[in-house]
Image (spheres, helix red, strand yellow):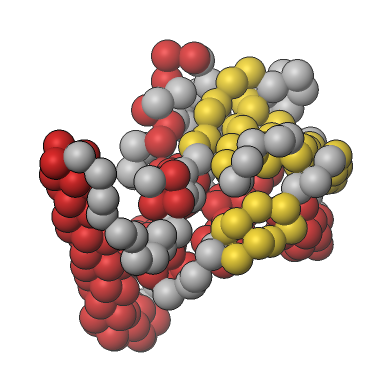
Length: 246
C-alpha cells in the first residue's frame, strides 16, 4: 500500500488471511487497478490533446505573422503564446508522469541542475544540501516539479535559496524567495489550475497559472506533497516532501 501511494508498482501479491481480510485486500487491489487506469488515461488524454492542438496553433501564428502590425495583432500573439505555454506544460507533465519508471535518484543533483539552468538565465539562485538526499522518484517528473517551484520563486523574488535536506523517512526540498509573498489564506488557492495571484505577487506576470498545480500533482503522485509557508527571506517558501522507504 505504501509503495502504491508513492506511485510505484507493488507487483504481484498473494491474498491470504481471514475472510474479511481477503475481502478487504481484493477491494483494495481492485481500487488500485482502477486508479492506475485513470492515471494512464489522463496522461494519454493530455498528451493527445496537446499534440492535436499544436497544428492549428502553428497555423494561427503563421497567419498572424502575415498580417499588418497592430495592437490587436500583438494581443492575439500574446494569447497564442500563453496557449502554447499551457500545452507545453500539460504535455511535459503527461510525458514525465506517464512514461517513466521510479528509480533511486539523488534529488540534490536534480535540484542543482535546475538551479544551474536558472542561474544561466540571470537569476540569483543557490542550492545547499545536507544528509542523504536519495529517494525513489521519477527523475523527469521531479525535475519538472522543481523547475516549476524555482521558476515561480525567481519570477517573484530577486534572491532564491534552495535547500535539499535528507531525513530518515523523507527528502525535503525548500525553495525560498525574498518576494512579496502571499497571504496564508491564499496558500491553497495558489495550487488551483490557472490560478493567478498577481495582485499579491505582481513583479512578473509570465505564466498561465499551472506551475504550482503541476508541481503538487507530481509530488502527490510520489506519495508526497508541497506545503507553502512564509520564507525567512521575507517572501514565500515552498517545501517539497518526497517520502522514502524506512
